[in-house]
Length: 76
Image 1 (cartoon, one colour):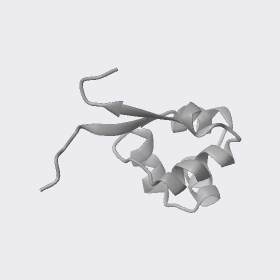
Image 2 (spheres, one colour):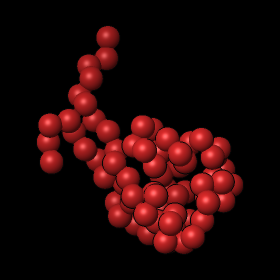
Image 3 (cartoon, one colour):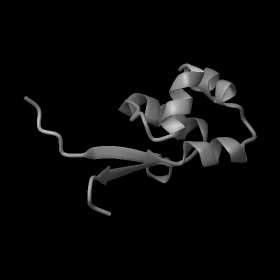
Image 4 (cartoon, helix red, strand yellow):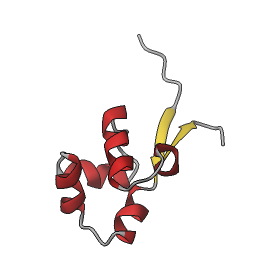
């Protein structure tokens, strides 16, 4: 059985998307996922694959660590 370390990613996808005046569907189309994927990612209910995280960062011409933050439950 896998141990749950409580690891997750927080992200700033919503902030970047709004600054670019994009809909969730427009961002989804640009990075090759569904609108639902963007929706749950913006709510921090989904951690994207590394490939998708890089796609999003590249789309926004940002460093991946500017958009995605590694967090461990109970730690800042």
